[in-house]
Image (cartoon, rainbow, N blue to C red; front, side, top):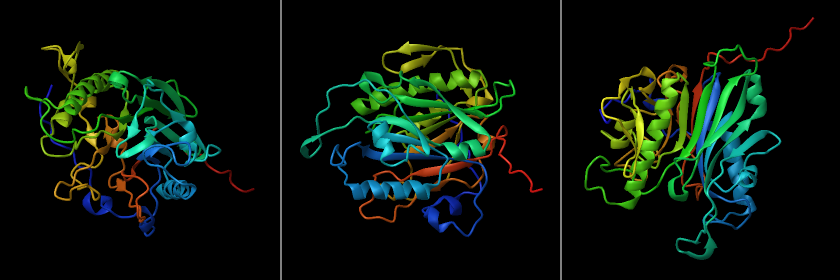
Length: 350
C-alpha cells in the first residue's frame, strides 16, 4: 500500500496561492462557497501568561484580528488548550466551538522556560453559525478520532456538514476532521527497516491508523477532508507518508505494533475515493522554515469524491504582517462549492 501516486495540481496555482496577504486580495470578487481554514495557534491557553507561548491581552486581541481577516466559515484548530482558550479568539456568541477530549497526563515545564508549565494541546473547530446557515448548511459533532492519539497524544476532532433540509440521501454531507500528528519527523524515509527516531516511529504508527480511517470512509462513499497540522511535508517529492495514504486503494486492516495498522496481503481494492488530493499540490509554501525546501506541514487532504468541490485557485496562506508573528504557523484556507448547499435567498419586495 505504498505505491506512488502523482500529486494532483489544483489550477490555476502559483500566483493565487503564494504569500499574498488575504487583505491584499480585495481587487478580486470574493468567491461564493464554503470557506474552510486551518490554524495551529501555537500553545493557545485560556489564561493570560499561561503555557509555552504566554500571551497578554494585546496578544489575544492580535489573534482576534487575524481571525477576522481570515474570514472563514469553519476553522480547524490545533494546539488549543480548551474551549475557553478558543473563546479568547473566536467570539462564542458568533462561533460554535468544539474541542476534542484528550487523555490527560502530567505535563512538565516548557522548554527553556523553567517554571512555565505546558498546557494541553488539543484539536477543534470554530464554526460561524450565521454564515453556515446562510449557505443552507448545518453541522453536527461526530465521535472524536481517539485511535490516532497513541500514548496520550492528540485526538482528531470530527464534524459532519450537511444540508439544513435533508433529502434522505446520506451522501449529501461532508465529513471534516481537524488533525495534529506527531512532530519531529517532517522529512526522511518511513518505509525502511532502519527507522530509529522515536518521533518517526510514532508518526509511522499514526499513519497506519489514519489510513485505515480514510479507507473506511472511502468504502462507504463518504466525502471527507482531513485538515490540519500533519507535521510532515506531504508535498515533498516521493514522500513516504503521502505515498502510503494516497494509493487509490482500500484495504482490510489489522493492528500492527510497529505500523499502527497493516494491510492484509491481497486485500487491496482500487477505489477512486481513496485517490486523494492536496489542495496546495505543486504550490511552493511561502512561509517555509527553510526557503530551500518550500513545503508546508499544514494541509487540506480531500477524498476523491470531495476534490471536485474545491474551487480552483482558492488556496491561500495568510501573512501576519506582525512582528513577532502571533503563532509559528500561518493560517491556510480554501473555498468549496458544495452541491448540496442551498444558500438562503431574501424575499422579493412587494
